[in-house]
Amino acid sequence: DTAVSQTPKYLVTQMGNDKSIKCEQNLGHDTMYWYKQDSKKFLKIMFSYNNKELIINETVPNRFSPKSPDKAHLNLHINSLELGDSAVYFCASSQGLAGALLQYFGPGTRLTVT
Amino acid sequence: GQSLEQPSEVTAVEGAIVQINCTYQTSGFYGLSWYQQHDGGAPTFLSYNALDGLEETGRFSSFLSRSDSYGYLLLQELQMKDSASYFCAVRSYNNAGNMLTFGGGTRLMVKP
Image (cartoon, rainbow over all chains, first blue to last red; front, side, top):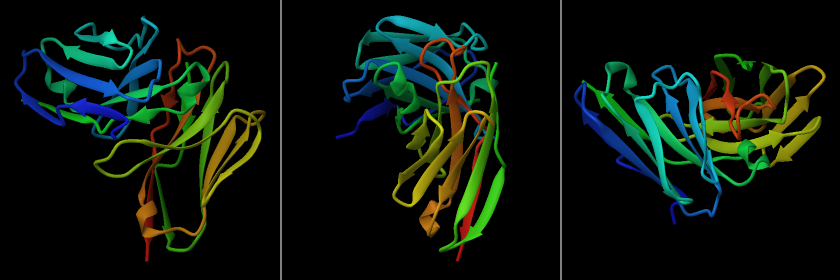
């Protein structure tokens, strides 16, 4: 069984479009995250979502919005896509406050904006 | 904010031991984690230290000195499959919520 899954694995789209990436975890964790990894492999936290509390990295543009229908899902919606949004996006999950040190990552979604 | 420094690249031969260092700056500290990422893959958790000392997990060990704001990952009996990027990450008091700040990663190349 896959612990953290994401769909789609690849996403190619044009500038200005709106797209969503889905994430699901079956680990029973209470906290989920979204990360962006750029071409230089720098891994940057975008959001943390715990018990309906959303923590946003202040550098993330408001075109990005996470949506959590339930504890097992955290989807990422991106409006008005820009070339600079091209990256690999990883979803992750952990259990509890201390659990943030031990996160389980999904396989990633490679987004290409043309 | 937080900042982490680790070497960008390390090369070693199969069977050897390699140490990847990480220094961090943060106004508060919960712990230091290490993750491995193969090309095209996802980060995978290796180890974490919340207290000073050495944590051993098979061929991998991680060390932390909070007074020196320093940690390292030690990989023993290197295998070709250990060629990957290794990231240190810190969770600190002044992070909002349960978030990690990652270093830039160290690319390890293991040669025969």
